[in-house]
Image 1 (cartoon, rainbow, N blue to C red):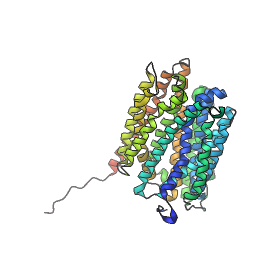
Image 2: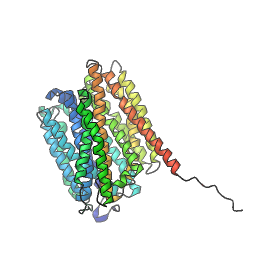
Image 3: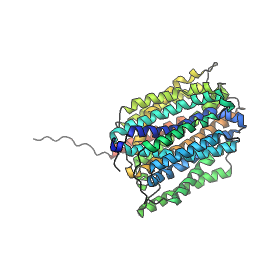
Image 4: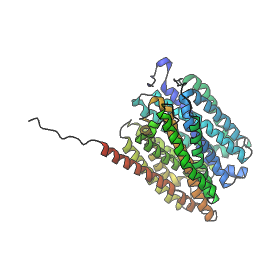
Length: 484
């Protein structure tokens, strides 16, 4: 599939991109805005620690399980159609979350939100991947990084303002209801301005593959979420063990379909692409570190340090502002030096996390939102440098006709990483907190941030190994031979 050109049938790729990213913005702001509201939700609905964890984890679990299938559905049924349907479902589920009266209703509504997000999000990158020629993709992905940072900074600040404002006596509920006008606008404008791209109606959906993939995600994420808090009962261990043969069966089925020259849910050509596989592994590790950190950081700031939701949002603002600066810097390099830029960005994030662990583990006697400016700004700047080259390195080898599958696979494993990260980090935090009598939030935060440090160190290891492999694969340069 060739990139669409600006001016074709009145088509403007940048206007379409703004609408696509505005839809994605709903997903991004929803994740960050919920973290600020968790203490208020817990107090208002009388939630347990496990239920609070599931407010985030239910969304991420449904999101992760649906991304790969819905990415493929976009290739078959049309990416624009799936995007708009996803926006509609996400908006409806936001209304259900906003009016939830019990924790089970809120958790199930969050899962429905996750399904809506899984429908729309793969189409964003897939449409952008096909819509732009190579020389413009770097700018487009850098813009996506800026939007991600805006979502992250707007979420905590808007969430804090809405909760403190207590609009109509609704307490935390407006954090979900704010999605309604945005969703309606994107649906109406998207029908007009997002281009309709060709789809492959003859493609057969691998329904057994959909079931196997979703089951594998469930078998991994559910025990990781519940295991630590329940003391790792036998069924958690059994589910993790069962994930291995189920995952192997999924891969075997994709290989069998490839031999029969039938469409695969996850194309085997991508699984055999070392650059794609290692890139997806780095995406998974990278995005497993951030959501869990912000979940426990919101509890640390409000419950541990006594900040109100607005102050908590202000305290985390340096992170997305750093992302904006890093995204601007990295966008100017285009498609050049992807691996070195990722290495520099991840190294900066690693240094920032070590500093954040020190500051939160040894807080000053007078704790203010300004306390975390330096470590969070450093972490955000490193993330801003990393996002664009990381996405480019993963998607640059994906052919246009598999853009939905490639984008869906990348973002599916991104969300699997997020789910595992939320579960791992929150488990480290709450287990240590309860072990300290529920009062030593500094020790719990210091313990939880070990995960982030290990994740970024693992990414640097993958980058080093990839560099060594590529270096050995390159043929030696021939020495110039004199013409005499």
